[in-house]
Length: 533
Image (cartoon, rainbow, N blue to C red; front, side, top):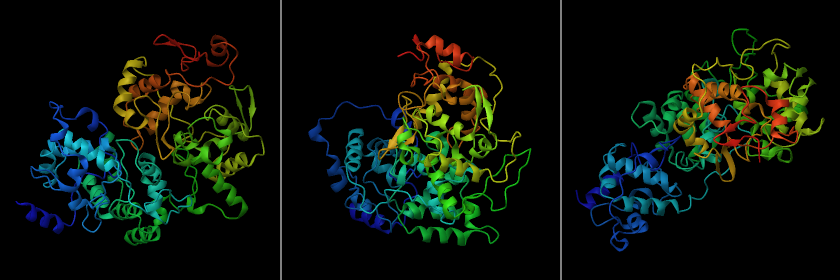
């Protein structure tokens, strides 16, 4: 096939089934590390075309210019279904070219082109397109007031946690801007392409990607869901996406019910977790404003309560679905459990005091004073979530699950292996989390920007229960109990900020507050006394 024939066929194509750029909700982070082709002997730079030359002119051995299909600036061609390349991460882009070249990704057009590029050429063109600015007009901020009826915006920014379906932004960052090499940008991609890739994952036609997350995600999406979220990220008006999704739903099911919680009044059931009111039932008036503010503080703590926060975490990092999700220490269960005695501070605590403790320990900050608008808003939100919940008794789904003791003693080395396999793609090999556009997407698990030694998550039984029920994100329950204990031990064996109750020495502080098998504070791990400077 000569160049003119090839170019004609490309213009006639309606879409690529699998193309280079869009991961939609994730592709193998490991591709860039574990499956790179062996590096050949260095080719003299003057003999290899630059990335710009490949993009604009192609190569002498038959590789057609990328811009032929993907636009003069790599902006993509929505009408033909060719995805955006501009602004993609170089590591991700290079890994996808390598996957086409060695057959791990199948496409009749891309495979021969990628095979005809040397590793050096693939790197060069990936770096070129990564340096190009994203197309103008791409959404940079997600709406703070998304409604359940706008299912594209809702799925993108809130998810559907009753199905263990995380929001797109929880992996791909605010506005779908992309995070690291594993979760490239969604914003500005062709809606047809996004929808096609979701369908490919749902039908087993595309490699599973990072942590095999995407097939699990796509399996929980209806055709209407896929259409709506694709329209959202393609920058179509939100109302259009919501209307399209609503029209596709069965008549007995409204869009708000689909994208949120069932609209029926929640009922307490001793055998099943309580269901808080749906977001669509959030009250109006001045009280409703306080409830809404509390939700925003909970989801974006540093933004809305920054003066009381001393790290890079938000409340919703450990209390998923903005404090709604059972077995993730939900707010509705905590609210009805107070006042209560706490051995942590040796007296009966009100719910407001309990919230203050979260700022002191989990947020490594300082407690808002009683009556502060931040505290009042969080109390209002919690009170509303607990509407109809039983008071004073045990509520199913409260706190984190209590795992049985591990069959083998929890082990740091085994935990490191579990972490590398299931956690590092999101939280980083160094445990310091990942950010996008200056906002934390995956929280740091240890170190100066994480929770301190007084936080409940530093205790291995709490961490193991949370991990077992909820991690990896959207794949809760996939780790064994042993793996959860091991990786919790690994995570909690790293240094973090000092316990605010520090007594002048690590030994005294451990004796007073940490003398349990579940606290590693004051123990020696890999030659280091945890809790020491």
